[in-house]
Image 1: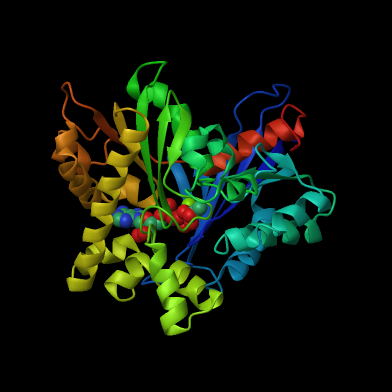
Image 2: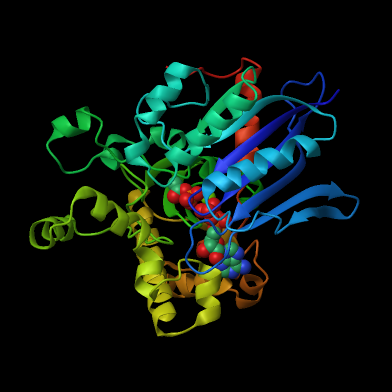
Length: 408
Ligand SMILES: Nc1ncnc2c1ncn2[C@@H]1O[C@H](COP(=O)(O)OP(=O)(O)O)[C@@H](O)[C@H]1O
Ligand SMILES: CC(=O)OP(=O)(O)O
Ligand SMILES: [Mg+2]
């Protein structure tokens, strides 16, 4: 019987899932996707929740379920239970040998994918306050699977792990150094996505040494990573997934003095601040309620234009900052929901960055690349789909086969 791995990726606005077959007798062979799907629209902000699933057919993926989410089931918990109900009937007789999860925060303890046990799960639960839009959903998926299938190995794959290569200057905040020693540092996130993109760079750029590349992961959450030869040197997210770029409902970089003012002058406590910064700000806050980029571009009203304008401005400034961190820029890669699909956003960012030598090719940008710039001496820009699920499947295969670390 075919052995299979399932993956679960709970993001802030979606839960994505996939099933992969493990080729027999070739432990290092690439896991082959059997099917995938997602529940999207969980962040509220202008679009309804939607369940979609696909199985391979002779002419490409075939939709096998659509909008079948029970009425009112627009939250992560309902999404997860819909997925766990759906999956067992759709792995086609394959024997599921492990489940791999995206777990957003691994802190300092976990720098590599990890076979989960109760002690590790407890340590990850302690990181919930550092990733309130993600870690609770990631661990809820682990708990739900453990309750249904107690003997099934579960592997955690961390967003933070890819950035452990950052030099100390990129990890520091300008606080007393004792706080850094106590663990207050820029961890960085979206690491599974960056790892996937780093793996694609040699093929994309046509060279083994890929040089100075800035990757813009623009999804519901958004961040930038400056890498040299595929290794993370700097990233825009920090201690939590709040810092850096504005996002669907998160503020991104903000003057910390604003928070002190809201506490002192407006009586905000940490819960109200947390709601404001994580759930009411970003595109949603600026537009007056819409967090979804596709909905904003379709809307085009004053609030929507204000939100998209701020977003473009901050992405462009952020790319230039990342370029400074890695000593220049040879290529810029856009990925995730907005990066791979929102041509007007990419065009506006690249036009803002013309001073760095980017020459937008409007035709290929409208066609979603992969190359977005005209040939020439300047840096190139690209759009590709990321695949966090593929990275989770590879890591899970390696951990289960005993070829990877079990934490430290
Ligand atoms: N065709 C499109 N045009 C513009 N924006 C898009 C398009 N497709 C997806 N998006 C945007 O991508 C974002 C979701 O990105 P995604 O990476 O799927 O999110 P998550 O962070 O939940 O994984 C949403 O803002 C959505 O509107
Ligand atoms: C870390 C993060 O923001 O993830 P997502 O983009 O999936 O919400
Ligand atoms: Mg995501």
